[in-house]
Amino acid sequence: MMKLWQIISAQSSQNMLYSQSNEPNDFTTTAKSDYAKILAEKIANARNDMEQMSAVQEQLDEIAELHEELTGRQLDDESNSNSSSSEAVETIKKFMPDGSVLIMTVKGGEVVEQFKKKPHLVAVADPSAPPTPSGNVAVTMKVKPQLDLFNLI
Image 1 (cartoon, one colour):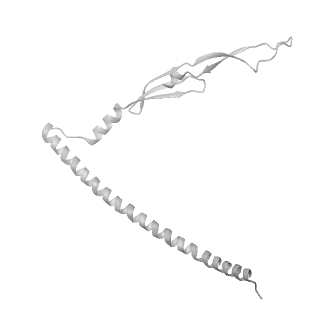
Image 2: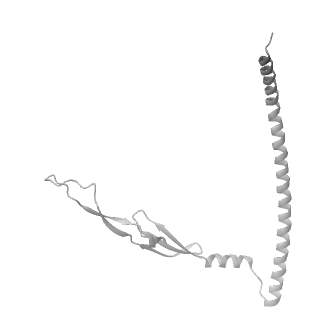
Image 3: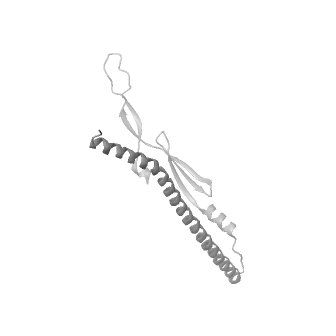
């Protein structure tokens, strides 16, 4: 004769087996349907974006035609993009391992100006100095670069 707790545990283990076998299928179908919804939204958004881009392109074409009528000159997209990139000036600071700062000015992808700023050197005690022949430890000094906060600006 089975006791009540044995019947309940047997029933719960059967329920667990049944639920475990059904959960992955439910999860995969749910995940697939969610993925399909997200994909459909992305496709709809892409179509809307393409329509907006074509409308903006038409407006740009109208503006270019109006500019040509008013000034008698054409707008060249390639010349405008090349001139704006060649006029872009960028200053790059590189901190070198010896403590110096290499400052480069780049214009249109080419280095226009370059110079090296020497580091600020500070005297510190040298812990690797050998002892003197008499056995006394002599404090010898060496110079190390020290980071100057004004170089960061």
